Amino acid sequence: MIKYHRLNHSHRNLFQLILRGFRLLSRYGFSARKMEFKLDQYLEILHQYDITPTIPITGVILKRHAQIAQKLSKNGVELAGHGYKHIDYTKLSEDEISEHFIHIGEAFRKNNISLSGFRFPYLKHDRICFQGLRNSHFKWDSSSTVYWDVVKDIKIERKKYRNYENMLKQYSYKDSVTYMSLPRFVDNILEIPVSLPDDDLLERGNMKDNNLATKVWGEILRQTHSRGELFSLQVHPERIHIFKEALEKILENSRQLSPKVWTANLGSIYDWWEEKKSFSAGLNFKSNGEYEVDLKCSPRATVLVRSHHLGNDQFYKGSSLMKERKFLIKSDRCPTIGIPKDSSVQLIQFLKNEGFIFELSEMKENYSIYLDTFGKFSEEDEMRALEIIHKSKSPLIRFWRWPNECKSALCITGDIDALTSFDFLGRLFC
Image (cartoon, rainbow, N blue to C red):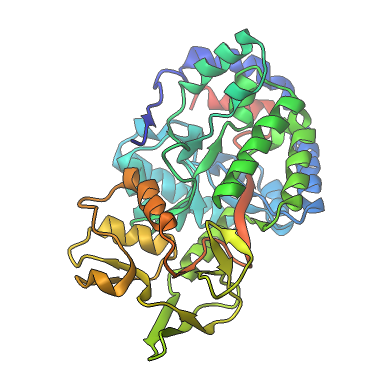
């Protein structure tokens, strides 16, 4: 069962913010010069690896430091919304949230910066917050989190680990053991999860160590690559002096993996997920026991085929890459998935999200795989459904999750909610 870990709503009270504020004020100067230097350092590292980051920024900071925001945008940084103010939006009414989104949009438009995505401050949101997003015409959101329990396997001091566990309790997340770290469309908004632990959790857990961060993030990179999933790594610009070496090591390691890792910003992930929604396949049975396959997809689509007669390079779970868009595949049954006509919308959406070719039919004997063991389908059933599909040895065709023959994906992101000491102090009295 998917574990939903709820956020402790008192963790960001005024007293705690003041205590934390004294520790963090040293990171900011009285002017923005100190943070500009850190931003330049941050971007220089990423540009060496041809990576464009996504940096959510609050509307207030964008207005106050418009020239810096415009410079970031001109240098290829994808800026996203991060609230009008850096506050807990679950404390606001629906009308107040809508008003804040109007102000965010105005700030971006006034500075000629495009706005398509959002991340809630503190990664905190609820149903009303999401309703506000939908009404404000955002295309994607990155406020949900997936936790990778990798710290427990690394030798660290017991006191540090206890402190880390206490910090972890303050987050709301889903467990990677039972939940896939993948984008999902929810009411036409693509939800792109952030991976935990990020730099914020490690630092507040008193784990400001590059070697430790390298091990933690390196293991998440390994697991997401093995599983073909997304590693959305938060490293905030103000902490680049703490985690510089760890970030560089992760980027270097990602380049060494095979099959390739797709490095992209969050907006590009949205564009890809939207693009692959239109992919389709035509299949025609031939009398000699073969199916003629005609795929309708973009040139950068990654096509996987499971077949004893096609391909010998196993890309993922017994499937091989197929470069052709028209080909023949030997199969006694249609090399797709069949599902009952009364299948839930959730099951249908899951199969679409995963790029499987499927049909609604009661003729189960016609398909390589027939999924009829699910009544109501939820996120809790996703891994079980994949296990059934992967255990089958029958021929199967699917569009893979990522483009250009990449097995997994990596995003680097980190928000901006202050550029000076005065900006940070101002957060305490929002």
